[in-house]
Image (cartoon, rainbow, N blue to C red):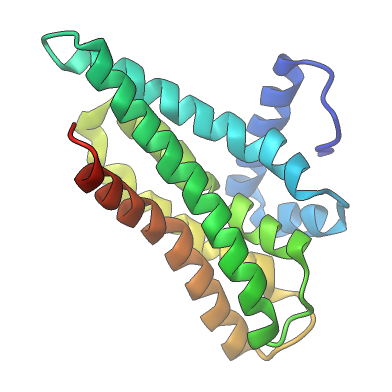
Length: 195
C-alpha cells in the first residue's frame, strides 16, 4: 500500500482502511511494507494518524451531544477538544521520547523509524476509541487496544541492532507510551479544565 499523496479524501480513507485491515490480517507483511516505504513524519501523520484522530474527535462530539439529555453544545465541544489534544499530544510526546530512546536501546537513531513505531502502533487505540465513543456500552472492547503492544513488537522484531530481549523491552516501552499517555493526558486536562 502506498501512503504517498492520495488524490482525494475517498482514496485517503480507502488506503487507511486497507492498512488497518492488513494490520489485523497480516501484520508481519504490513510491517515489512512499512519499513520499505520512505515516508516522512508528516506523511504518516496526514495519511494515518490525523484522519483516525479526527474520526475519534467527531465521534466523541456526536456521542457526547446525543448521550447528554440536555444537548449542551459547549460541553460536547470541550470533550471533543480534550480528546483531540490528548491523542495528538500523546502522539508527538511519544514520538519525541521514542526517538530519544532509540540510541539507549542500541537501535540506529532515526526519527522516521520512531514515527512509524508510534503512529502505526497507535492504530488499534484510535479504532477502539472511535467505536467506544460511538457506542459507550461496549467499553469492554478497550482491552483490544493492547494489540498495539503486539504491533510495536512486530515493528522492532526484525530491525538490526540489539538482541531480542532489548527489542522486547523497547516494544513494551513504546506500547506503554502509546496506550498509557492518552489516559494520563486526559486526566491532567480534565483536572485543568472544568467539564
